[in-house]
Image (cartoon, rainbow, N blue to C red; front, side, top):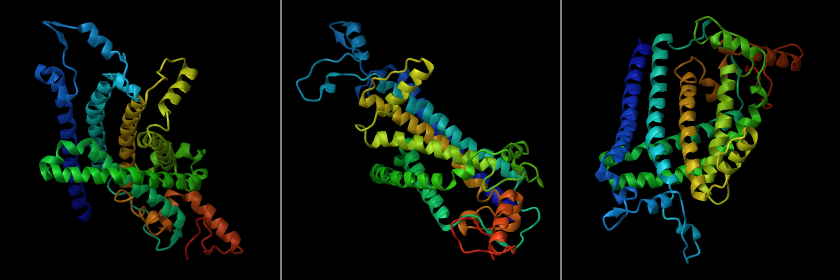
Amino acid sequence: MRCRFAACVLTLVLTLGLSFLMASGIAVDRAEAQNRTDPALRVSPERGIVPGGTLGGASDAEMWRAIRKGVAGTVSIPDKKAGQLVQSEGDNWRALRNGPVTLYGAYALGGIFVLLALFFLIRGRIKVDHGLAGETITRFNTLERASHWLLAVSFILLALTGLNILYGRHFLPQIIGNDAFGAIMIAGKYVHNYVAFAFMVGLTLIFVQWVLHNLPSRHDIMWILKGGGVLIKGVHPPAKKFNAGQKVIFWLVVLGGVSLSISGWALLFPFTTSAFAETFTVINSLFGTTLPTDLTVIQEQQYSQLWHAIMSMFLIVIVIAHIYIGSVGMQGAFAAMGSGEVDLNWAKEHHSLWVEEVQAKSGAKSGGKAKAEPDDGSPQPAE
């Protein structure tokens, strides 16, 4: 009964969240479409769109064409970049950020909520088929759990402040007022900038500790073929410390996190890196493409911001699914990162090969008796 009630509440919350995200994305998309079609808006200087220049009664099309191509004049001040009146790529960046990135990002976030709600209603909570054993085994030690929570909490803070930057201005000022929204945005900016370093530290820690456990193995193929045992009740493919699904999450988070860190670093310190110019150079040499490699600082910022937003939305979707399966989606899963101790039957059903390895190691250390040893950094059976 409680599970059904929880499912109804979860579905309601997710539906409301989806409606908000879709409304925000659609509102932005419509606003951009209006900018492109409404003549009054198209010539509005405060909207950042260049009005048609005139010489008498005729438009100087050649002059504006040259400006749009990025032709720079000369200036007497030290900043020579000021000689370029219009940076045309900026209009393309704005259209992409406020259009497809915002709209499809909202669809992706709403979509994952709906899919998880449907999965919960159809499959229900994944329970321990043989019941809880009442005996536990150490799944993760203190350092592993601390590293995981450092990464998790920092990512959540970054996700919330980042989503506010992307979507907040479309509805929060109408709810809390401009002054309060401005204060939230300033606070969010500092949180986002400084918590980013905690995210990088957490990412490095989990990589160092778990990379060897997340290398592909032959057992992963069987796990994938059997759907990880989460689709059909009673099916439990063998797995070591991490199964194939967890390995996929691990590498997506690590590689995506590194990509986020690089693009974020370029945004924090715009004059210290040229990540996209270097990346485009490598791609051109490998595939014979003609991507631009002589990017200005502004162009680097634009590419970095777009990639940062796209990769952030992708990782948020992945992490939402990870949070679901590690909490309400599977019985006994949260304890692994809570206390570090998991029920023995849960461990045998989801990580049977790992349990065998731990018990064999413990038995060898105790002269054949499988009893717990002091925590030396590796998982050991609990008393």
